[in-house]
Amino acid sequence: KSLKIIKEQEEYETSALNYPKYFKIAIDKALGSTVIDVDGNVYIDMVTGISVVNLGHNNPYIRRAVEEQLGKIWHSLEVPTEIRVNFSKKLLSTLGFKAKLLFTTTGADAVEAAVKIARWITGKKTIITFEGSYHGITAGTVGLTGANRYKNFTQFFDDRVAKFPYPYPYRCPFKDCLNEILDLIDYALSNPGYLGDDVAGILVEPIQGEGGYVVPPKGFLKGLREIADKYSIPLIVDEVQTGVGRTGKMWAYQWENIEPDIVCISKAIGEGIPVSMVAYRQDYDKLPIGFHLGTYRGNPLGLAAGLAALEFIEKYDILSRVQRLGNKIIKELSTVNNSHVGDIRGLGFMIGIELVKDGKNPWSEGTKKVIEEALKRGLLVYKAGRWDNVIRLMPPLTIPEILLDRALTILNDILNSL
Ligand code: PMP
Image (cartoon, rainbow, N blue to C red):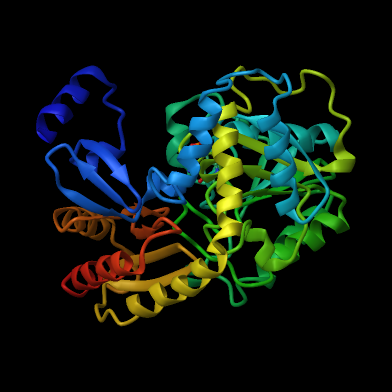
């Protein structure tokens, strides 16, 4: 049955599809931490739609909230609704700094709005971003995204961007992977001949997602915060992939106890219903009417899911669970003994396994092999990385320990036999 549906999809849809290349199944339904294909095969899901369904598929708590909202209103533009203000109040209470919200629709839309806010507030243009970063591939974000491969598909992108190395401990060309990079940025900002005084913001992922689940050394965000303060530039933290409990804190920047100026939020906040937003420092609130528009911003169903997700995380103490089990995942994977496994890293339920060959050369065929073999054995995992050579694990934060153990047994076995 899967093969028939795959064939039909190929007939009707663009040849540019990405994920069906790796997952040659057609999905019937998904429940909790499992996905069930149309032939009745059951898979343990360590992909969660790229860290979207963080609290598990069809989570009854989320579902109830969405169903309740379904009976009220599905689309309201910006006209106030109870769900809109209840969601906002709750979300703002989790951020740790006084902020206001601007609703958007997707991750890239949130990043575009964030960058617009930074430029509006400062009156400047250049945005500092990082090699290996991913902030979207719309015309407004593809220039901010580190990897050049996406730029090949468009002639028009924002090029008022200055890119710096991201601290990538496994592949760091510097002696000191933290301070040398921070010094480089500081030097560029202090030197009018280099970046001049035209910098409108620093845009950063607390952990690089698409770039390969790269965890920077402790102190990186703090260092950026200090630089941003020194030069009075907004620090924009892109929490699209790291947010909503994924790393074991509600927001990954909270691991460094910093207050960003602007935060981009998407993916898991809607638990699968497209909704996103930018939270920005309250004293930036001089934005003119119509500053950023979009028909679907703040969809009530997405906000119902979002409010329920934030409540659920608190109610069931999901963050400490993710911290505890995240450490366990790293510990279990560390027992793998195979020279193709170059690096195992992560924070919470955001784990990367970097595959290499002939020393430290990126091995992208390896990740393909692992994904295919895992699929055959009932496990969904996916890849990331500048060279597509990192297996990334992003299980539901609610995954029962018995399923997690089963997934790790399968994965360890595959990695050991590479
Ligand atoms: N920022 C980050 C950190 C992301 O991981 C992504 C998507 N992977 C985006 C932005 C773009 O989000 P979207 O695909 O919803 O446009």
